[in-house]
Length: 79
Image (cartoon, rainbow, N blue to C red; front, side):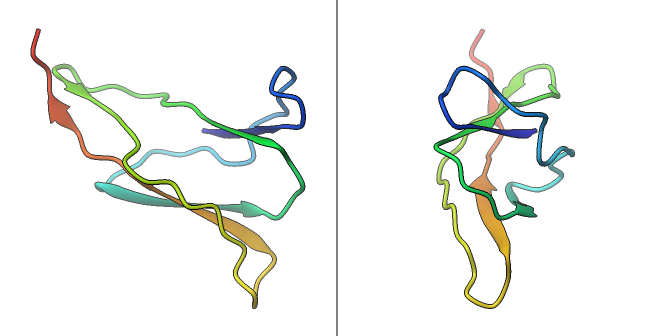
């Protein structure tokens, strides 16, 4: 889930929610002015963890959306 904030303390309702099904996830939401972006993992798989390897926040010149690709690669737990 992706939420936005202007002060890092008060967060608006999520602008995007969903479930990643691949190692690379592309999340689109309407363009807006913000200072902070919070990405919250809402699911889990026993023995695996989730992480962000790269994060790009872009506004394509021909569209009015911000695209934030998130590369997540599950890894084995070492418990």
